[in-house]
Image (cartoon, rainbow, N blue to C red; front, side, top):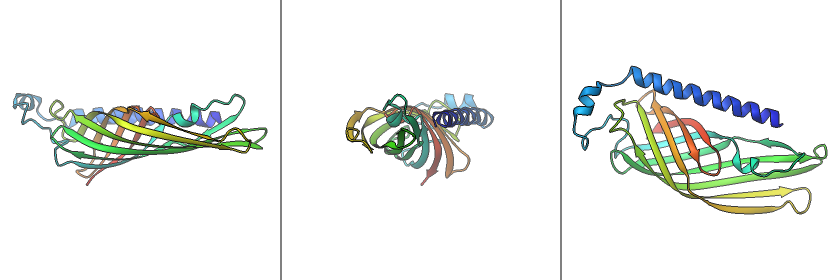
Length: 209
């Protein structure tokens, strides 16, 4: 099962690379006139990729599965699902937003030909603030941002053998860097890397509400 997890992780990395390459190439093709953009006053400058009225809903998948992989039982076979994310963000200034994210995942360890099994589930919730680089990047369809916040993760394990049942709760300080490319005014794809105690990278879709 570890081999299958490695294959999934490698596929995720390939998808991340392709989406990032697509963002950069599409952004280059659709770039506004840089001279006019950068000559405008910084305070009023805006590429249009983000604004104080923005309202964004995103759904994505993350890898690797840190809550499951950080539980290490030598000799046990491991399976781990991707991390499922739901996120919302609202603009409060043309380049600043605030939002939250939820994360959920699960997995298991098996031993003794599958007769002994340990199940793991984890839940994450955080509030984040975001800074968008729409005053620095003159591409309306490309939204590049960085964010940080405060949250928590709850992980629970249950096993067929006594002594494996426990739960833990961690306070987390998520830090993110990401980009969204909007194919239409209402729909786009995003790629995000960083740390939130659930995964190191996630990719998904974004809807402008």
